[in-house]
Length: 137
Image (cartoon, rainbow, N blue to C red; front, side, top):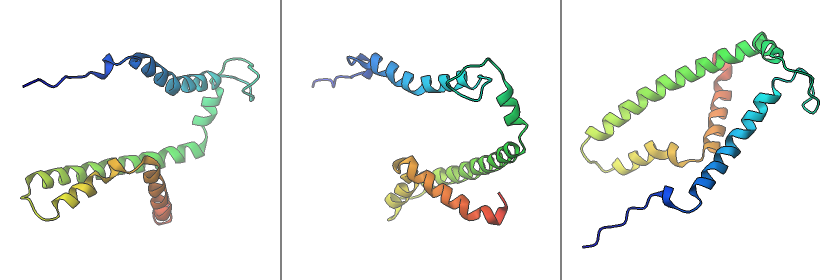
């Protein structure tokens, strides 16, 4: 019987060029932003010199501190809760006997992988806007 051919995507013509173009599209705008953030002038089109003053004023801003604090609280809480839930779900799904709703349970667990990120982001934003008043975040 014939062995199936193993195809490596790196052997496809144009793979390296497409990979380089994708990396450039992703990282060049970030690099340009980093360079222009060092401009001492308030206009992007007129370069007046190099400074870190914009970063200093941002880090000394009280609203920045409040936003950073909220971000840390939410991210640490979400990380802890999601890690605990995922671990319990993984243990439960691998050690359980087959039952009628097992396929549906797997679908619910894998749903975040299948739903586009923008829908998840809008739902998360709506949820946090709903609870913001209760927790004062």
